[in-house]
Image (cartoon, rainbow, N blue to C red; front, top):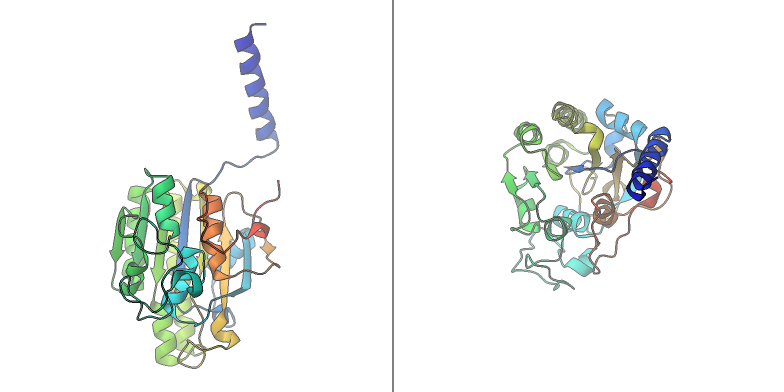
Length: 300
C-alpha cells in the first residue's frame, strides 16, 4: 500500500472512531445573556421554563457569587474582565475610563483592563463579535475597537428583537446581550414582589426567543449559551453585603458542556471570562485572576 493511502486510511479510521463514540464538534459560537439584577432569589417564585431547560441540558449553580460592592459596574466589569475591582479598578457606577480611584493593574489595547471582547479580537481577529445592551453604561466597560457591533437599545424587548435579527443575519462567533428590565422591577417594586417575578418571567421568554433564533440560524447545536447576572437585591436596592444581593445564577449549556450537572465547586463572577476563553480557544490574559469552571465541562 502506498504511503498516501495509508495516511488516508488512518484518517478515516480516526473519523469513524470519533463518530462511533459520539464525539461532539467543538463549539463555534458563544451567546452570553446577562440579566441585570436577576439574582438567585429570582428562581424562588418565577416560572422560568427556558432557563430551567438549559439547566437540565447543561451545568449550573445558583450559588455563584458577585463581587463587592454588589453594584452593576464592578460586577459587569469583573464578569468580562476575569478579575475583581482590586485588579481592574472599576469600583462603582461612577467609574469612567478616564475617571477612577484605583488604577488598573494592566491595560490592554483598548486602553482599559483587558476584557474577553478584546482577547477575542486580538486572538481571533476575523471573528464576528456583537454587544447589545439596554443599560447604556455597560458600553463604557468594553474596548471600543473590539466588537463589530456595539449597540445600546432602549429596553429589554427591543434588545431581544435586535439580538434575534443579528443572530440570524450575522451568526456571530461571540455575542453578549445585556437585559436591564429585572433590575428596574427590583428597584421599583422590590426584589421579591410580584412585579419582579413578572419581569423575570418576561426575561425567560426573551431567552427562549433567542434560543429559537439560534435554531433558525442553524447554529444551535454549535453554540454554547451562558446565562448569568451581575447581582441580586434586597428590598428595593442592592450594593450591600447580604446573600440575596451576592448570590447569582450561572447557567451554561451547549457542545462540550456536561448535561444536568449541578456545579458543586465555587464559582465567582470573574470566573466567567476564563471559562469563555476556554470555550473560544483563547489564551487568558495573565492579569486575570479567575479560572475556568472546569466542572461544567464534559469529562473526556
